[in-house]
Length: 471
Image 1 (cartoon, rainbow, N blue to C red):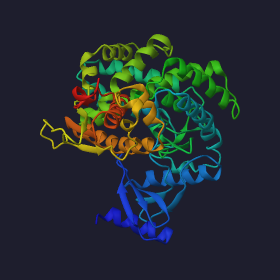
Image 2 (image 1 turned 45 degrees about the vertical axis):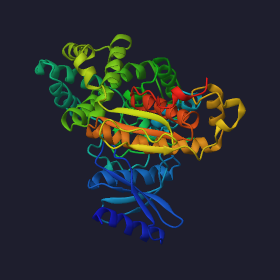
Image 3 (image 1 turned 135 degrees about the horizontal axis):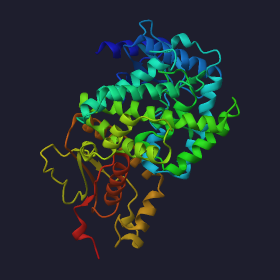
Image 4 (image 1 turned 60 degrees about the vertical axis):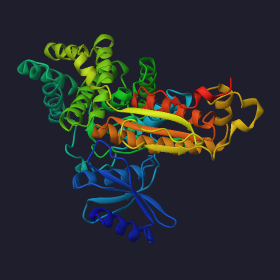
């Protein structure tokens, strides 16, 4: 048994008094932390393993503080004496980003964003009161040094690795101008640092917040900029403006807000946040060869284009702006983001057999839909297929359908994320039913739509029995 799993098992047993029945690792994120879902006979928890003790101390300490003042964060159940492992409450698998990917900007998703906006200033203003800022890691405040780190991160991991030439001294001069401008903004609040849709868990149709271990003293504007210009969330600009105004209204309940001054600095923080994120895409994508991070680049470029044309921060940064315009117009950078993974999705009839995989990779997933309610048994649907709206409405109304397709989404999403990260080029997914006409066709189409939304893939379901459907 791997040592970290043994430590987490022992920690769980010591805390819960139960033997571990099941421990499963959760999909990796952009960090080096590893998470495990752990179950006993009656108790569940999420176990975290991270060799960075200072980061763990920050997360655990902040979580306990935020929980004590009523903010929605995971409860910390146990913290190992080695400083590398801890247990927290299990908030499930659904994030604000995954909901946005699945549903688009539905009324439900919009409402959740508004809930998130209402909570944010409470973290920033109420959350800083009594917080042990000695836990802040790696800096106590988002000061000049922090900003310079972020801008150099962008310079070394994105600008240099992109292959576009630039005047380094002129760029450094512009960095100093931007830092001096942003340093004028009030910065006595809790700055969450990575406040984005993947770090908002949705449980019971309400948000819970995670991944604030990089928090520090800082300005209000940075976190709302992080959320609204989260690249792959790709929020419409009119909705961003609505949420920005809502945020200023909410923040004014807890601290004094001068809207004109706030907005003046806000778009400067939008710029530095986008540049920091581009540095992360370069580090993970160009340097570590995790190609799925490169898929965020075109969204970041679109955000930069919107910022420079519609809400220019209002300070002069000629060399930086020239460089950014080169990025915005670079077909090379946009081509980097095209995913190399081809996902083939098929429906089939078990009477004819499972379709063969011509990629040579073994056929991938096969899902048996025969346990689902069968529209083909009803006269109204016999001459229709899973592509027809009445059949789709019938299946969507069945309680079994949501459970079935939700489980499939979770399994396939994990595989697609892993395959993209490892540079795999092919994945096959097949859905079978008795005749290959109704259930398998419907579920193949649902998965195709889901993957196209979430991963910006271009899949089309292939229906192997279509020529045999009744006319």
